[in-house]
Image (cartoon, rainbow, N blue to C red; front, side):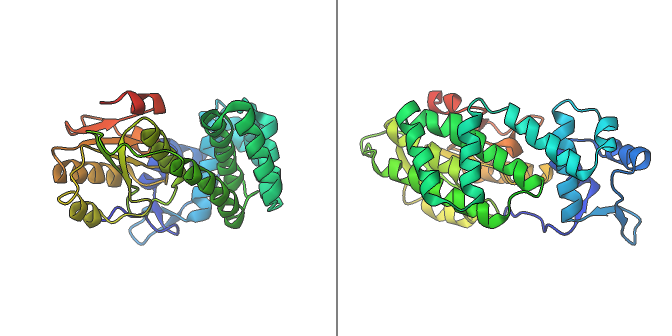
Length: 296
């Protein structure tokens, strides 16, 4: 089963609801009352949205979920919405200075500056705290910068590749426990390319003495089916960050659970956290790294 990201040029109002966490009924009211955006209509008269609509709605949702009233958001220009989003992101960072320094290095494509800041924080905090206290807030803020049009994909790729390389080096520095009874298979499904959280989990599991195999990002479902008969696994782990509909995530979870009924399937990330209702017995949603490391 392919788990793919829907094309970025067409979204239904239900897709927008799932992406933003704001009910379709509320979105319709906002359209009518505040004229924040104007959805186009298909021949069937259903609302459709494009990539720019999604970006605008995600920015509005970001402000709304941070306690800003919609009436205030509606009174702001796009530039003012962007400024407020960046302000909120900065206030949420406990290590704002270092995060801002990394952002400046990213915007300038300054590899040496970025690396110097990274290593200084590793020396100051240790590798793991550097990732969780500096790099994760940095990546969150980069996401807001993309949302507000202040970062382009090339800059995202620039910083992500540096971070990916550092974590992979740390993974190589850990010795694999060949006698481990627990074997973890790590992967990201088709359409999911945000590999940094997966790499960090691989580092933590390997360091804690687990036997770990990682397939990386954008893995076809059939690749998992061909691996497990040859190398049995006790656990699978995946992390979903990319915006997809709740229905697509649910279908993926059910298919994974049915295909591997004897495997404990661990899932994390904001797109998994949106799931409601009962999950298959062998599926476990984790909301922190501590939960992952404590899991048996």
